[in-house]
Image 1 (tube, rainbow, N blue to C red):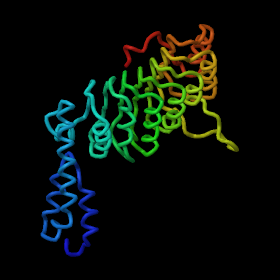
Image 2: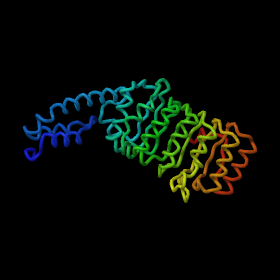
Image 3: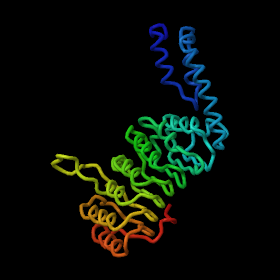
Image 4: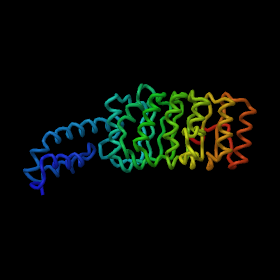
Length: 293
């Protein structure tokens, strides 16, 4: 079969088989005949370098081998001080982690951490991940925008729980992230506790204006969102009014739990949201989200 393929075609097939966490399949393919070995030499060298870098990354994350990461269902790390190259590589490895379901990390010391990680996430990356938690990690508005771009490329298609607590996300960050979140078909819990976001970001999330010239409201939204945690943010009475409007228009039909504790809004505005929650969908407001994180 090798003789029937051009050198370019052989290299394309080899590239498709390349997996830095499991390089043997590609190597076995290139060794199937003398005709395959020579055209794939440069690609084998690149794969070897990628494998060595991936192995070093796994050790830094506290894993014994690439096999452990490849077969992991849940990944957690805390302040591993990953460099920009390592973070980008970790994102790129998302395409070869089909079994990973939970990604949780705390990386307080690294600027641009999420930007680098999200930059490596391509279409269909992390296909089985349902939980992403980046608590006390420096996401910021730029990181939120990078995450939005990754979601827009089709990464994390099954995401159900997104926790971005204490991540330095402001109005611009949530406004950038909101359209991508509204397109996630399975999102059921969203936690944005302790960020500087306010009324504009919340409005973009729960009650975006219809597109210019639209004859009907957009079909995308937060139809499965059950839990929304917004405590210790800069939401005021205007944001509460946006929530009331969203509940009135059934934008949040599945909502069961809402946390607005410690926000800047008045007691009267929060009471109006509470009454609307009960009236429209039977949801409850809680004093603290800590136990549910």
